[in-house]
Image (cartoon, rainbow, N blue to C red; front, side):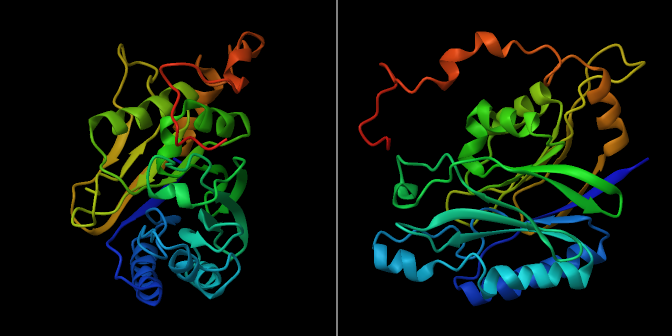
Length: 292
């Protein structure tokens, strides 16, 4: 069996960028010791998902895309021989971004992503949204794996996972910072099911404001030969406590399933989907705080 071992760093921030760097390094080392291929942080780890109201304070809290904080985790990935998906408040003009960088086991930066669906009804209105979804081929000890990324609220739009599937993602990494309850977990299950891909989500533990753990892995495989009914795609759902949690994704089973089953891009009819890319918004969905 070709499998990918994923470590979910469900950990609480320290209150400082420097403290988060040190604590993140400690938990990445633990992930490597447990045999992880990928270590994944929760959303905006550099600042612990803190978004000050004052724009000067917000900019001061941000870190450079190629600055010390992000570079450190690339160097750590090379040292430990594992991929690391690190999250950070990115210094950006006109306002910071909610960003993610994936380093492979050699320390090479293979994927960058800025959150497209910022929560403009809340504090994230002060951030700059991203404008695209990216997929990379991640070189692992188990071979190359197609990896994409979404961040938290991106999960609530089926288009996010769909475009990543169309661009070649087999596994979507999802840093998160919100309460993961039955409906949000169901969204992840649905995105995995309809796209026949795996979705790994890492959340902050309980005790971090508005968070409750329940990091998860859904493997995207609903049916297996010889089983009369569908199976539970949930490989992992953690509790609320802080810690490093590990899950194994069976790549052989996922790839065989994708090669024969009916979802994903097998029978789509994109010629009938024109309304999806129209920009007009009608009642009851008009919101005065929506950014164009």
